[in-house]
Length: 236
Image (cartoon, rainbow, N blue to C red):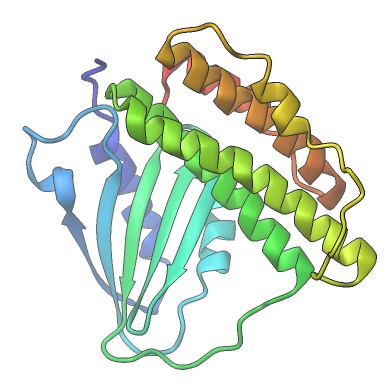
């Protein structure tokens, strides 16, 4: 297992970026950052970020700021709750963050973007964030969770195809299908006969190739080659 730790530098760098946002009151480290005995190469950076007001913090603007600082943001997930939001993000350099944005009370209501483009963007970014988690679980020898997440990635490529079909047919109700081609199924059929780690890695990369092919039609830059490099070195 790799024992070099990148997290202290990543924490300091992120805190400098967060200091540019006037909405932020204070930042506190959490999780393995507080215990050197728990911190290893595969740990993420856990921070709680306290806000001055209940006005919704613009997480997508924050992600854009990170993109300007580090190049491509590899992938992220946003989870919204009544009095806090969570951003889980992986940068192209492999740094992973689990950021909780905490409001002083119940946050203000803001309209959700339910557009086709927003759904596609959310799935694509969630897919690539999950891929970084698969590598972390592989690095720690957790083949059960790594397999679960890799199969979830395969499912996300199918969900993308379903959304595209819904838009093409202008409905989400389909009594019959069109015997559609499902590329990820063909990919999975090619990877039998390996040990568990090899199977998970190949599943990961085949799913990544399928996602690149689908997402390229919606302006998303390909990431499969970046992921392949990460996989070779477990750089996460």
